[in-house]
Image (cartoon, rainbow, N blue to C red; front, side, top):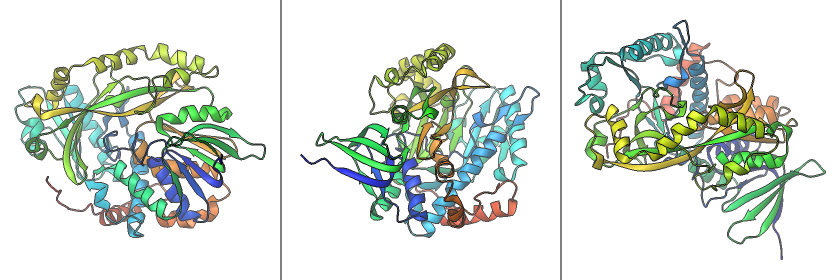
Length: 500
């Protein structure tokens, strides 16, 4: 019986937005390298990158209130928002380059212009929003943001939310028109089609079972062909583990010391999706609210216009939930089998710390549709039950690790890269802002893993990403040029949306 074996330069595990981005960057920089991809499912972008499994906001920190923190002295810290916005600008520049080089034909297949708004109720929240607005609008990255606490103005901005509102609570919102809606599922598929045309060896229905170091310093993967059941062996000099929630198990199997003392905490999400075209047509934008007291940062309620298959849709959520699976298509044993002797204490400490979080998530799972409708009515007072259906979103696995600030077993809300000391292996863990910052995160992987190549690659990287190595905030002219050119290339300027 013949077993397939291959030797290749680079193996990418998981056909999501991260592998798609890293593969595309490498193909532009070193077209001669051989790249092989393994994906457990039958096509690209089906897990966390899928448009129904993630929020698709184009996280630019324009409206997400959890990226701006009120400090004890009452000032608002916007450093995280600046960071995330700069990272999103890097993605925008790279996508523009792909459109300009004709690698992407029609940008509207994956990105559309859409106002981003934050909305709050109650005097204390209104005061916070105003302070946040003042801090952000002084910054060139957030120019064009408006603030209003005038109900008449808000009726123009968010009619669906204002109609039928009886509460006398003060209400305010900020709005910025340079936001976007990004369909990361579509973008992932576009990039994999491109990679396929560039002779990248893409293997669907192939599950990576094991990963270990060979004597000559290469990585050997045991890969099961799901259709034939055969086990194949594939070796490479460099491996990127981009399997979403599935990455933690593979990182543990690699045995690298950097992967020890790390755990994962799975969180599932549920969205409500509107099935009434008249309601969908009444709302245009992404409106983020404030998480309820005691709720985790990933459950900030938002009402999002989305463009999926060139049709306008409307989603509300997310309602968080708990399932021990690490992937939507994962196993009920994922959480248990991720506990190892080296991360046991970290996991136990996290368990004790996140008791209230777990309780909250389990309560969320148990919510009836009517209870969910009540939460939706805080946004849309006139919402009718029959206009909304439930959609189960993707699984997120939040990283748990020991930190100086949080001590043992601290839950991390963010995206993290773990790489081996010699740069021959890297894994991507964590959750939001994830996909939106994919280009920045993959450049970080390249810096850690290919330090000897970065100097020769730099001119080409700068051609793809003009702001590479520079702060946009510190270079307002460059920022302005990039805003104009990306809006042009990605067809974001002044286009009226398609109404379905």
